[in-house]
Image (cartoon, one colour):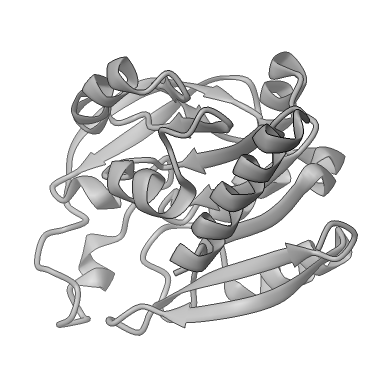
Length: 230
Protein backbone atom coordinates (compact mmCIF):
# COMPACT_ATOMS: atom_id res chain seq x y z
CA UNK A 1 0.00 0.00 0.00
CA UNK A 2 1.06 3.62 -0.51
CA UNK A 3 0.90 4.56 3.15
CA UNK A 4 2.09 1.87 5.54
CA UNK A 5 0.85 1.33 9.12
CA UNK A 6 4.34 2.31 10.25
CA UNK A 7 3.84 5.68 8.53
CA UNK A 8 0.52 6.17 10.38
CA UNK A 9 2.08 5.27 13.75
CA UNK A 10 5.00 7.62 13.12
CA UNK A 11 2.60 10.44 12.24
CA UNK A 12 0.62 9.79 15.43
CA UNK A 13 3.82 9.82 17.47
CA UNK A 14 4.84 13.14 15.90
CA UNK A 15 1.45 14.57 16.86
CA UNK A 16 1.85 13.40 20.46
CA UNK A 17 5.32 14.93 20.68
CA UNK A 18 3.92 18.22 19.41
CA UNK A 19 1.19 18.14 22.04
CA UNK A 20 3.65 17.42 24.84
CA UNK A 21 5.94 20.21 23.70
CA UNK A 22 3.09 22.72 23.39
CA UNK A 23 3.72 23.20 19.66
CA UNK A 24 0.78 23.36 17.23
CA UNK A 25 -0.01 20.01 15.62
CA UNK A 26 0.49 20.38 11.84
CA UNK A 27 -2.51 19.57 9.72
CA UNK A 28 -2.03 16.76 7.22
CA UNK A 29 -4.19 17.18 4.11
CA UNK A 30 -5.09 14.33 1.75
CA UNK A 31 -7.11 14.47 -1.48
CA UNK A 32 -8.91 11.45 -2.92
CA UNK A 33 -10.34 11.78 -6.45
CA UNK A 34 -12.65 8.90 -7.33
CA UNK A 35 -13.34 8.21 -3.67
CA UNK A 36 -15.85 5.36 -3.84
CA UNK A 37 -15.30 2.75 -1.11
CA UNK A 38 -12.53 4.91 0.32
CA UNK A 39 -13.51 5.00 3.98
CA UNK A 40 -11.53 2.00 5.17
CA UNK A 41 -8.41 3.32 3.43
CA UNK A 42 -8.83 6.78 4.99
CA UNK A 43 -9.23 5.31 8.47
CA UNK A 44 -6.54 2.65 8.37
CA UNK A 45 -3.94 4.23 6.11
CA UNK A 46 -4.39 7.98 6.44
CA UNK A 47 -5.49 8.21 10.06
CA UNK A 48 -8.89 9.82 9.50
CA UNK A 49 -10.34 10.56 12.92
CA UNK A 50 -7.21 12.18 14.34
CA UNK A 51 -7.72 15.88 14.81
CA UNK A 52 -4.88 16.90 12.50
CA UNK A 53 -5.99 14.75 9.51
CA UNK A 54 -8.18 16.25 6.79
CA UNK A 55 -9.44 14.26 3.81
CA UNK A 56 -11.04 15.97 0.80
CA UNK A 57 -12.87 13.33 -1.26
CA UNK A 58 -14.42 13.75 -4.72
CA UNK A 59 -17.00 11.29 -6.06
CA UNK A 60 -19.41 12.20 -8.90
CA UNK A 61 -21.34 8.91 -8.92
CA UNK A 62 -24.52 9.61 -6.88
CA UNK A 63 -24.85 6.02 -5.67
CA UNK A 64 -21.25 5.89 -4.46
CA UNK A 65 -21.54 9.30 -2.81
CA UNK A 66 -24.69 8.18 -0.97
CA UNK A 67 -22.69 5.33 0.58
CA UNK A 68 -19.98 7.73 1.75
CA UNK A 69 -22.23 10.48 3.11
CA UNK A 70 -22.87 8.94 6.57
CA UNK A 71 -19.14 8.94 7.31
CA UNK A 72 -18.90 12.72 6.89
CA UNK A 73 -21.38 13.15 9.74
CA UNK A 74 -19.17 11.03 12.02
CA UNK A 75 -15.79 12.50 11.05
CA UNK A 76 -15.38 16.31 10.97
CA UNK A 77 -12.10 15.90 9.10
CA UNK A 78 -13.82 14.31 6.10
CA UNK A 79 -15.11 16.65 3.38
CA UNK A 80 -17.11 15.14 0.52
CA UNK A 81 -17.68 16.73 -2.90
CA UNK A 82 -20.26 15.23 -5.31
CA UNK A 83 -18.35 16.33 -8.38
CA UNK A 84 -15.60 15.28 -10.77
CA UNK A 85 -12.12 16.77 -11.08
CA UNK A 86 -11.26 17.71 -14.65
CA UNK A 87 -9.38 20.21 -16.81
CA UNK A 88 -12.17 22.81 -16.66
CA UNK A 89 -14.64 24.17 -14.14
CA UNK A 90 -18.17 23.55 -15.35
CA UNK A 91 -20.20 20.47 -16.22
CA UNK A 92 -19.52 17.25 -18.10
CA UNK A 93 -21.10 13.96 -19.12
CA UNK A 94 -20.40 11.11 -16.70
CA UNK A 95 -20.81 7.44 -17.62
CA UNK A 96 -22.35 5.33 -14.87
CA UNK A 97 -21.30 1.73 -15.47
CA UNK A 98 -22.72 -1.60 -14.31
CA UNK A 99 -19.73 -1.94 -12.00
CA UNK A 100 -19.68 1.38 -10.07
CA UNK A 101 -15.90 1.14 -9.77
CA UNK A 102 -15.62 1.63 -13.54
CA UNK A 103 -17.73 4.81 -13.80
CA UNK A 104 -15.91 7.58 -15.65
CA UNK A 105 -15.95 10.89 -17.52
CA UNK A 106 -14.44 9.09 -20.50
CA UNK A 107 -16.22 6.78 -22.92
CA UNK A 108 -15.79 3.15 -21.81
CA UNK A 109 -15.08 0.44 -24.37
CA UNK A 110 -16.78 -2.65 -22.91
CA UNK A 111 -16.17 -4.70 -26.04
CA UNK A 112 -12.42 -4.32 -25.48
CA UNK A 113 -12.64 -5.14 -21.78
CA UNK A 114 -14.49 -8.35 -22.57
CA UNK A 115 -11.35 -9.63 -24.31
CA UNK A 116 -9.69 -9.88 -20.89
CA UNK A 117 -11.06 -12.80 -18.87
CA UNK A 118 -9.73 -11.24 -15.66
CA UNK A 119 -12.06 -8.23 -15.98
CA UNK A 120 -15.54 -9.18 -14.69
CA UNK A 121 -18.04 -9.47 -17.55
CA UNK A 122 -20.14 -6.39 -18.33
CA UNK A 123 -18.25 -4.22 -15.81
CA UNK A 124 -17.86 -1.38 -18.31
CA UNK A 125 -21.39 -1.53 -19.73
CA UNK A 126 -22.91 1.96 -19.47
CA UNK A 127 -26.26 1.92 -17.68
CA UNK A 128 -26.76 5.71 -17.53
CA UNK A 129 -25.14 8.95 -18.68
CA UNK A 130 -25.60 11.89 -16.32
CA UNK A 131 -24.36 15.46 -16.11
CA UNK A 132 -22.00 16.27 -13.23
CA UNK A 133 -20.20 19.35 -11.98
CA UNK A 134 -16.46 19.55 -12.59
CA UNK A 135 -13.68 21.51 -10.93
CA UNK A 136 -9.93 21.81 -11.48
CA UNK A 137 -7.57 20.95 -8.66
CA UNK A 138 -5.94 24.34 -9.09
CA UNK A 139 -9.27 26.07 -8.46
CA UNK A 140 -9.98 23.84 -5.49
CA UNK A 141 -6.59 24.36 -3.85
CA UNK A 142 -6.84 28.12 -4.27
CA UNK A 143 -10.43 28.22 -2.98
CA UNK A 144 -9.57 26.20 0.12
CA UNK A 145 -6.23 27.90 0.72
CA UNK A 146 -4.36 24.58 0.74
CA UNK A 147 -0.58 25.01 0.56
CA UNK A 148 0.51 21.40 1.07
CA UNK A 149 -1.05 18.02 0.25
CA UNK A 150 0.53 14.89 1.68
CA UNK A 151 -1.10 12.59 -0.86
CA UNK A 152 -3.16 13.07 -4.00
CA UNK A 153 -4.81 9.70 -4.65
CA UNK A 154 -6.49 9.43 -8.06
CA UNK A 155 -8.71 6.62 -9.33
CA UNK A 156 -10.67 8.32 -12.11
CA UNK A 157 -10.92 5.40 -14.52
CA UNK A 158 -8.77 6.58 -17.38
CA UNK A 159 -8.97 10.28 -16.51
CA UNK A 160 -6.22 10.20 -13.89
CA UNK A 161 -3.49 12.14 -15.66
CA UNK A 162 -5.91 14.95 -16.54
CA UNK A 163 -6.77 15.20 -12.84
CA UNK A 164 -3.09 15.81 -12.08
CA UNK A 165 -2.82 18.23 -15.01
CA UNK A 166 -5.77 20.19 -13.66
CA UNK A 167 -3.62 21.28 -10.72
CA UNK A 168 -1.30 23.27 -13.01
CA UNK A 169 1.82 24.43 -11.22
CA UNK A 170 0.06 23.85 -7.89
CA UNK A 171 0.90 20.16 -8.33
CA UNK A 172 4.24 21.12 -6.77
CA UNK A 173 2.41 21.52 -3.44
CA UNK A 174 1.76 17.76 -3.39
CA UNK A 175 4.19 15.41 -1.65
CA UNK A 176 2.99 12.16 -3.28
CA UNK A 177 0.69 11.38 -6.19
CA UNK A 178 -0.82 7.99 -6.84
CA UNK A 179 -2.71 7.38 -10.09
CA UNK A 180 -3.97 4.51 -12.22
CA UNK A 181 -2.87 4.27 -15.85
CA UNK A 182 -3.64 1.96 -18.76
CA UNK A 183 -0.81 -0.18 -20.09
CA UNK A 184 -2.60 -2.70 -22.31
CA UNK A 185 -5.36 -2.23 -24.89
CA UNK A 186 -7.30 1.00 -24.50
CA UNK A 187 -10.57 0.32 -22.68
CA UNK A 188 -11.39 3.98 -21.97
CA UNK A 189 -11.21 6.32 -24.97
CA UNK A 190 -8.22 8.62 -24.49
CA UNK A 191 -7.34 7.05 -21.14
CA UNK A 192 -4.12 7.90 -19.31
CA UNK A 193 -1.10 5.90 -20.46
CA UNK A 194 1.89 4.96 -18.34
CA UNK A 195 4.51 6.61 -20.55
CA UNK A 196 2.53 9.88 -20.66
CA UNK A 197 2.14 9.95 -16.89
CA UNK A 198 5.83 9.30 -16.22
CA UNK A 199 6.87 12.02 -18.68
CA UNK A 200 4.42 14.61 -17.38
CA UNK A 201 5.10 14.00 -13.70
CA UNK A 202 8.86 13.89 -14.29
CA UNK A 203 8.65 17.28 -15.98
CA UNK A 204 6.93 18.70 -12.91
CA UNK A 205 9.45 17.57 -10.33
CA UNK A 206 8.24 14.05 -9.50
CA UNK A 207 10.07 10.73 -9.58
CA UNK A 208 8.34 7.38 -10.08
CA UNK A 209 8.73 5.62 -6.72
CA UNK A 210 6.47 2.58 -6.99
CA UNK A 211 4.55 0.60 -9.58
CA UNK A 212 1.81 -1.94 -8.96
CA UNK A 213 0.36 -4.11 -11.73
CA UNK A 214 -3.36 -4.88 -11.54
CA UNK A 215 -4.28 -8.59 -11.62
CA UNK A 216 -5.85 -8.25 -15.08
CA UNK A 217 -2.53 -6.91 -16.41
CA UNK A 218 -3.89 -3.96 -18.38
CA UNK A 219 -3.37 -1.23 -15.77
CA UNK A 220 -0.84 -0.05 -13.21
CA UNK A 221 -0.96 2.08 -10.08
CA UNK A 222 1.95 4.52 -10.20
CA UNK A 223 3.22 6.36 -7.12
CA UNK A 224 5.24 9.54 -7.65
CA UNK A 225 7.25 11.48 -5.08
CA UNK A 226 7.93 15.21 -5.24
CA UNK A 227 11.70 15.64 -5.38
CA UNK A 228 11.52 18.99 -3.59
CA UNK A 229 9.34 17.79 -0.69
CA UNK A 230 10.62 14.29 0.08
